Amino acid sequence: MRTALAALAALALSTHAGLAGEVAPTDVNYMDGAVEMSLSGTAGDATEGRSIVGSKKKGNCVACHMVSDLADVPFHGEIGPPLDGAGERWTEAELRGIVANAKLTFEDSMMPSFYKTEGFIRPGKAYTGKAADDTFGPLLTAQQIEDVVAYLVTLKE
Amino acid sequence: MQKIKTVLGTCAAMALTAGVAMAGPAEDKLILNEEIEMVTVTTAPDHMSDAMDTIYSGWHFRGVETRAMQSDDFDNPGMIAVEQAEDAWNTVDGSEGKSCASCHDGSDSMAGVKPVYPKWSEAAGEVRTLEHQINDCRENRMGAEKWKYTGGTMQGMVALIASVSRGMPVNVAIDGPAQSMWEQGKELYYTRTGQLELSCANCHEDNYGMMIRADHLSQGQINGFPVYRLKNTKLNSVHARFKGCVRDTRAETYKPGGQEFIALELYVTSRGNGLSVEGPSIRN
Image 1 (cartoon, rainbow over the protein chains, first blue to last red):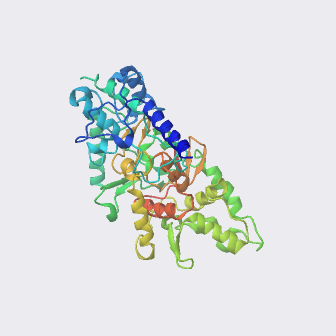
Image 2 (cartoon, chains in turn cyan, orange):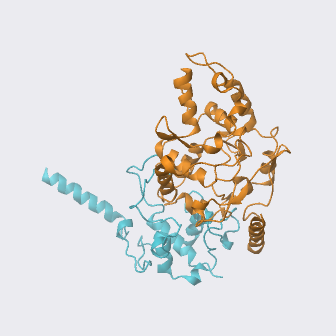
Image 3 (cartoon, rainbow over the protein chains, first blue to last red):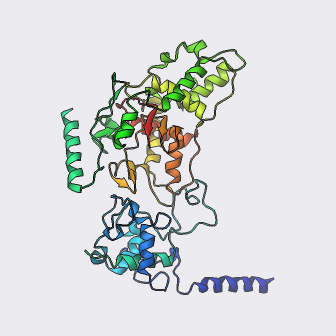
């Protein structure tokens, strides 16, 4: 029995390690809101990041932020600051921290925390209105965060 | 009035400088059936004076066509449900052989009721919405079956009762025995729920007038309920709308008709004290 459990534990570990170098949402190291280390261990893809920022099904960042570079996407919101020039105003580490959990950079920010899994009030199962279940995960994956950051650093005035 | 005009002027100026066509509430006047002058913008009630100076009906945040549609009952699709409810009002139902009219006479005798709901019921010892009161009548006076809280029949009846108070100012009591429920509602209003961690206030107090994607954020006033929504072409209850909003914060919602939404309805209604009752209004 012990052997079986140990084998299971080993399996669990190796599965986790399968996402080599990935930092879990609960293990992110924030320094004054910024995150130096890549969350996925794999370089971000700016083209994919652009798609995530503009897609309602993914990041939907344009719901609140205007981005001139995404002129092909209709209806940009005006709740958050425009993202034009974000790559000049912030370092990559700062952008990573803001996308992962903006509230650690801007206290009480309305911006959702895209790489966070704990501390919610009445968390739901996506947009069903039902309670969260064991499928609950961060709004974006570690790699998606890296992709968005890779795109944001390209935004210059 | 001068103050309101100045505020509107400032909003218009802001819209121009921001270069955004729809920013801010539209400057317009709602006159119902060329007869009733509706109060759609007024000074905020005292209890929320630290949050904002002026309150606006959601009517100001909708497009020209939608606004026009609400000004004439012949153009208002919500009035079809009101007509059907008028029939129900006069129809005997249940074991006691009574209709609404048996006790209340004509539906116009309900003028003045909608403005004060949700309301503390001394007999029941609780705060009740109009829906609860209607079902109480049906079950205990008429011996009839309850209607579904958010259903079309119920919302038609709520719309009928609202319609005879159109133009009267919303005036719910927030003190006395209703106060603890009101405090609960206020707490909920400012609680950031769900995975998106959004409170009512995030959108409807801090960012009204702004665009969130293609939506023009209003103050979330509920003086126009039940609301005929163009997107689902039916009357929508306050609690169904609350549920949709909470769901969109990626939260586990509360139950329509339940204590949380009663409290929230009382609080949100009180944020509109002074605006005209508009139900059934038209929104997108």
